[in-house]
Structures are given as structure tokens and as C-alpha cells.
Length: 65
Image (cartoon, rainbow, N blue to C red):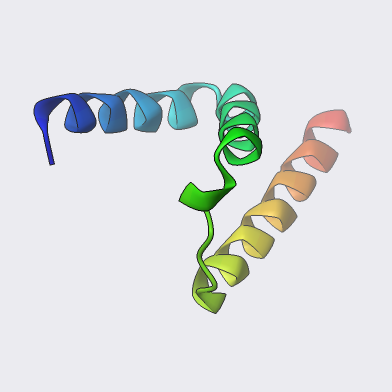
């Protein structure tokens, strides 16, 4: 991995931690613009995504109470 790739990775990790909504929007846009980068039939990733969606929904529910 190049230094640039490593730096971008660190920035994305920080964004995910500090502003998960913006990170999700950014990743959604990236997936729409470059779907070939996200084509991965790995079922484990799909399970993780589903779990993360449930966690997000739960967190939004807690925040709204």
C-alpha cells in the first residue's frame, strides 16, 4: 500500500469514527460512482452490513427518545 493509500485510509477511519453519517453518505456516493470497487459477493460482509444497519437503527431510536 502506498503512503497516499495509507493516509486516505486513516482519514476515512477518523471520519467514520467522528462523523458516521457523513462517512455513510461518502461511501454510498463512492459505491454509486464506482460500483466495480464494491462488488464483493462475500456473505460475511453482507452480514456485517446488515448488523451495522440494525445498530444504526437502534442508535437512531435511542437518540430520538
